[in-house]
Length: 172
Image 1 (cartoon, one colour):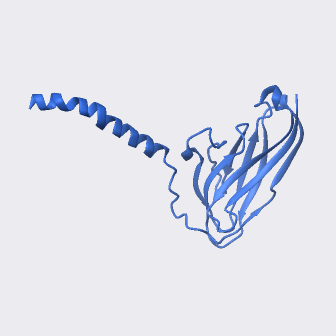
Image 2: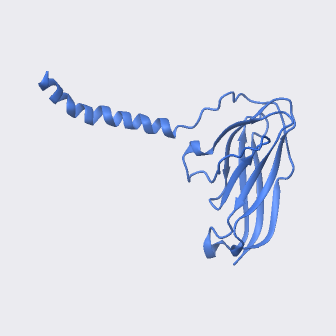
Image 3: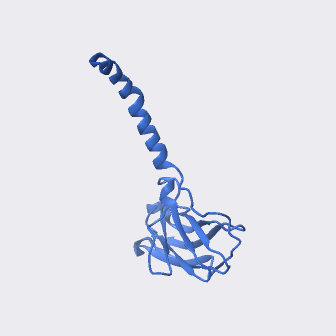
């Protein structure tokens, strides 16, 4: 029996343990499954799709823009993912019940599950997207005109990707 255990030890280390690690990595990085994510025939209303900060200095620090998203239909709208077009911008959801989501950023800078929202907007309910821009994020190369986008992926049948943006003229 002892000989059998000694001969199987290398197999454990070479096959079984790496397999467990690989399956663990696959499970962790797997895109989330959206529960009840069947397509919705509902509709949304946006209070604005673009915001202009005008001229802002890199020394100004962080600036925020807010966008209201209202469910104007009859069914729930599931919010799947929230992400931005650049690492200099973070996005957050402010819910009608007063709760706040985490901060979301640009895809490619985090794991796929880091963009998962997994909440819904009930008919008549409004959530706000808060976009926070750091005008100093790109250093001295970051001066001039900028335009950034924030994307909210939903289960809407028509136009499932809600996109809002902001622009600014960044100075030193």
